[in-house]
Length: 260
Image (cartoon, rainbow, N blue to C red; front, side, top):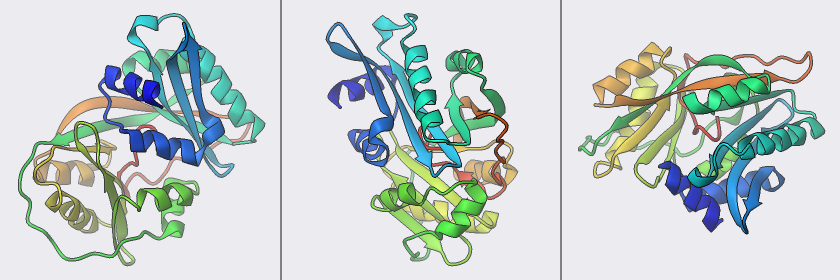
């Protein structure tokens, strides 16, 4: 665990020890590590959402050990793990440097995804909200059953608007993290964001969103966010089984690059 966390720090990523522990709890056999010279030098994780979808994340390699094929070896093992469990579709969020590796395995571009950041600043608290989402509603929008993940994320911070949507958040190493957020309207998403920001006025906040969701972009600008990073969501369908693209119009924030 400590070595995996050290790789996260070397890459400048925002995940914490709790994020790694959550991944291990969700899919212990899907958390892969490669040792070389007696230490963990590379990692990759897989989280399954039923047999509908598997998500690959935390593809990290020690900077001094890159370009040795470590990431490719772990990707091969991750895809074998997926195939052995009969999962229909595999997805991930790729950096520019990683995308060419994933194309070798048959991944195709689905859409762009961006990280936006807000610097510390006071936001007036809104109304008191409920605290847990509707699993069925989330599944129809996300496209797979991630109830187990949502239950764990809800232990951090969560809020819901009955019949309108929900949002969650958690601490990060460099910034608080807003997401996931799934809502039926921009107004509901705005109220959920206000709830989260009001509790994090002294911290920077990361928000990962789909730039094609115009409402999410406008709300982000309204609250002082600005884009700082752009990735590509990529998809691999196993055999003839395809996967539907989620309803991005109602996904205002993803759960994380490592979670979907």
